[in-house]
Image (cartoon, rainbow, N blue to C red; front, side):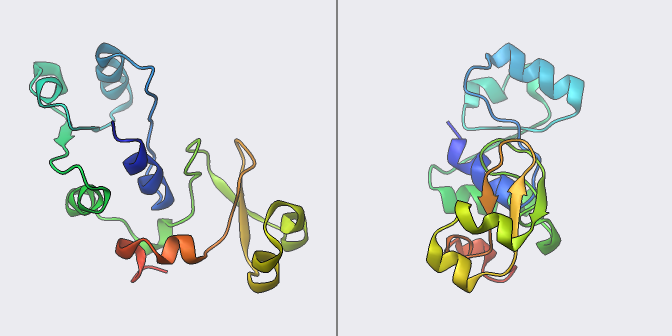
Length: 140
């Protein structure tokens, strides 16, 4: 339900656990055990007594969802590109030469700093994909 939101929040540095295979009871158990906040659009789920530590996402548009989350949990500009948008793993700096075979040629010739996920190996850089996300324009 909120997969796009999860990926974008990870780009902002939020530790986001997202798995569509989890049942509602598993989500509640994990949130309680790990002290996580549940983000949901499901009003019935949010009304459950054990789901007290949640934020009900009101809008279906991704930009508005992000604004709503950031209103409650502001992101610092220092956290951008610290987590993998796919697996939530931590990112580490990648030597530029090691990135050569993992990025398009035009990216390699124009970008000097790269990161890779320690979990899945995905390569990241600060590019137009981040600048095009309006809520990040002032942060990068």
